[in-house]
Every structure is written in C-alpha cells, then in structure tokens.
Image (cartoon, rainbow, N blue to C red; front, top):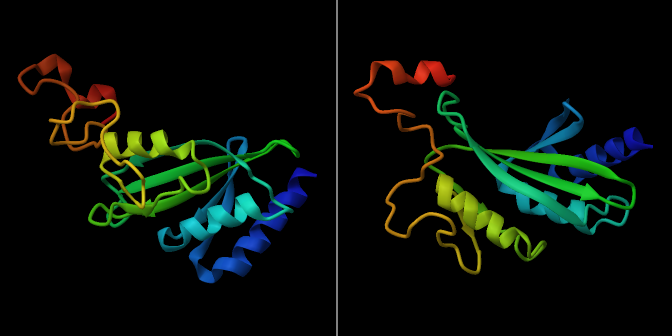
Amino acid sequence: MELAIHNIIGEKLQTLLGDQYEGKHLEYDFMVYHIHKSKIAEALELLKTDADLNFHFLTTLCASHFPENKGAEFVMMYQLHNMYQNVRIRIKTQLPENELSLPSITQLWPSANWMERQEYDFFGINFEGHPDLRRILNMDEMNYFPLRKEYRMEDAGRDDKDDKFFGR
C-alpha cells in the first residue's frame, strides 16, 4: 500500500513540475522528495489538495545550514502526513546563501505561521507573503541568525573548547 502511494506521488510531481522535480530517495523511514525551490509552493499545494494524495497535515518545517555545499548551502525540509493512509513524507529544497527566500505556505497550512517565523529567526530565511514575518524566539535587536554555522561554537580564547571536538 505505502509503496503504491509513493509511486503515485512521484508520477504526479513529475507531471506537474517536469525537471523541477529532482527525484526521491528513502532516508531512514521517510521517503524524501526533492523539489527545486522555484516550484516548492506548487508541489506542496498538490500534495495537500490532490484527493489521491491528501497530505493535509504539516508536521514540521525546518532549515539546515551546510556551508560546505557551495550554491546549496541551506536546505528547507517540510514533513507532511496523510493521516487517512498513515503515510509520512519529507519534501526538501535547496537554497543558495545569496537567495534565502521561499514562498510562505501559511495559506495552505495556517500552522506554518510560527514555524516559518522560527526559521526566519534562526536562519534568516525570508518567507514571501508571510503575514507577520518577524523574530519569534530571539530578541528583536539581534543582527545575526544564531543557527547558521558562520560562528565558532566556543570561545576562541580557550584551547580546550575547539570546534573540532563538536563535529566541525
């Protein structure tokens, strides 16, 4: 049953997006679909509104920063759930550091409001069309985005606190 829906998802995304649908792969227990950022809104709308797919629940969205991936330094991940068939998927799109902008999906899922604000707050991703895009957890006076890997994790004056001990 679950494999059949993944074939249907892939076919529908391919039909709608053409070469902007970049494929899928299994990552742990989730099928991950890769969509070019220019078509992310169309893909998410299809996944929610298509009667065969019915991914009506946005579980989460979150960003990651991979500064070593030149031209695709940021990744935005959307996790969706079709509760009727109990199928969960992830949608990923890559963003270059000089184009940190995506369309807001608050019109599709109102619950995306605070999630998008959080990713703006921590990574600086601009969600175009968001009704109230401003910091949600950090102080308004902050002039940086703390979850970007642009800063050392520890005090540079301490030899025992080198970033290499923390996976960097």
